[in-house]
Length: 401
Ligand code: HEM
Image (cartoon, rainbow, N blue to C red; front, side, top):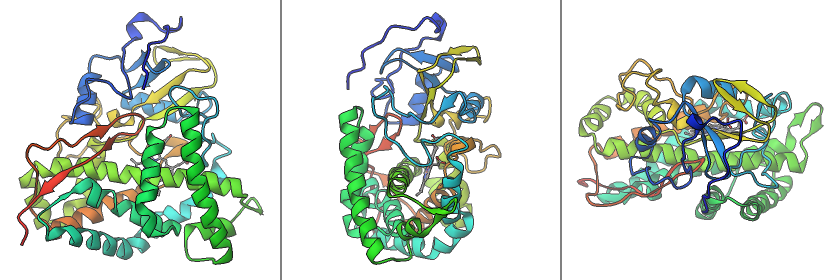
C-alpha cells in the first residue's frame, strides 16, 4: 500500500500536522490498541496526517461524539480513505438522516434486546458445540477455531445463509477489509452481491424464518423494498456482522489468556461476564469511522474544508483519560465504562445488543469447559490495522482433562 505524503492544505496549521499511516504505521505493535494510544499520545486531539491522500484523525471521546452526531457537516455518504471514485453504497450506513430512518426502523425489531434474548438458547448451543470441538485437544488457534466461527455462524443462521459456506464468506469479508482501490472494491462487493442475489432468489421460491425472507416481505412507506435496497442492507450486515465480534473477542481473550486471576474469578462467578465483555469492548475497539466533510466548518480549533475526509478513531474513545481514569488498565469492576466503539448518533450500531450477547455467551461457554488457559509461548499473533483492526491468530493451550 503506497502511503505517499500529500501537500498540506492551507487550512491546516503546522502544529496540527502529525504523520500517521492508518494502514501501516510502524509504531503499532502486537498490543494494537495500547500502542495506538501511545503512538498518538503526542498528537493533538484533532490532527491532519498527510499520508493516504491526507485526512483528519480525531482521537478524543467528546469530539468524536460531536462529529458522528453532525451529519449535516460530516456525511457518511463516503467512507473510504483515500477517497475512491465510486464509493460503496450501504443501507442504512451511507445514508444521512432523514433518509436512513425508515431503513433503521426495518432493521431495529430484528436486533432489539428482546429479539436477541429470544435467540440466546440457539446461540448458546452453537457456542457450546464450537468450544466442545476444541476442549479435548488442549490447544487451538482461538481466532481461527473459535472467535471467527461463532459470530459468523450466528450471523449466517440469522440471515438464512448456508453454514457450510462459512469459510468462503469469511474470506470474502477479509478481502473486502484489505481493499483500498476502486477496482478492489468492485471485485469484493460484486462477490457479496452475487451471493445474496442467489440466496434471495432461493428465498423467493422457498420462504423461511430468516432475515432474507423478512426483507423480501417487509414494506417501507407502503411499498416493498427493491432488490437494490435489500442488497445494500445485506452488504452492511455481512460486513458488520462477520468481522467485528470476532476481532473484539479475539483481543479480549488475548488479554484474558495473560490474566489467570481473572480467568479463575470469571469461571467461579459467571454473573460477571457482562462486565468482562464490556471492558473488552472498551479496551479493544476495532472500528474507526470515516466521514466526508460536505460543507466548510470551523470548530474545535480546526478548519474543515469541503471534500476532506475525517477519521474518528473510535478505539481511542475508550482509552481517553479525560473520560476514564487509568484507561489502559483492564478492570471489570470499574464504574466508568464510557466508549464509542459502537459509535453514537444516527448510525449507532444496530447490532450492539447481539454483539454484547455473543461475546458474553462465548466467554461463558468457554470458561465452563476451559477454566484455565494461556497463550502458547513464543508465538506471534499478527494483526491488521486500517479502518477495521483485526487480530489474525491467537494460539492458546490448556491442560485438557
Ligand atoms: C463488537 C462488535 C461490533 C462493533 C464494534 C460494531 C461497531 C459498529 C459501528 C462503530 C457502527 C457505526 C459506524 C459509523 O458510525 O459509521 C456500526 C454500524 C452498524 N452495525 Fe455494528 N458493530 C458490531 C457488531 C455488529 C453486528 C453483530 C451487527 C449485525 C449483525 C451489526 C450491524 C450494524 C449495522 C446494521 C450498522 C449500521 C447502522 C446504521 O448505519 O444505521 N454490528 N457498527
